[in-house]
Image (cartoon, rainbow, N blue to C red; front, side):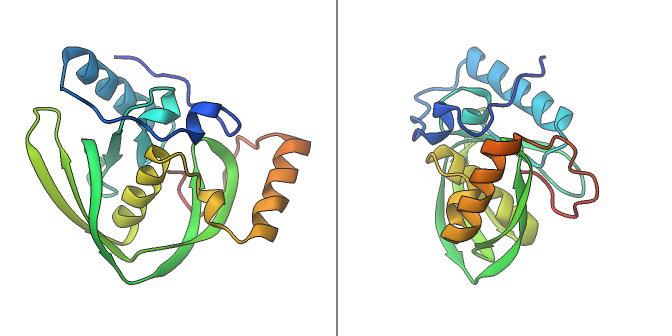
Length: 175
């Protein structure tokens, strides 16, 4: 398959609500395979279709331990609970990391690439990945979840200095 270019902060596709996938086609399966290749090439744990310029409700996520990728079509978070704050980054905003408050656990319903319904419950990092990628499908970036002062400081830094591709030394993973 192919490694695709990840869209960066400022690209309008990242701010649009993605449309539902109407049917699983060979073309969609190719997009899924390309997204998996791209996610691994970028050393991410998740990737939403808008991040590669495809405005569809589709994400791929990797298990932190097994690194096995899973495609989720038209995902919906049906339940969530608790609250936890942790440092987060994003492949579309390279080099930027900040503490983000998220639900501690989530239950998600979606379809797999064969069109079968799946229900997943996740805690910890996996729950954070699901929520982060769901935000992408709604045109929301993790910096939108920060307090206004921190968010404006990050935006000014990006405008002045651009992106820092080297995130070495950061404990957080770019999602």
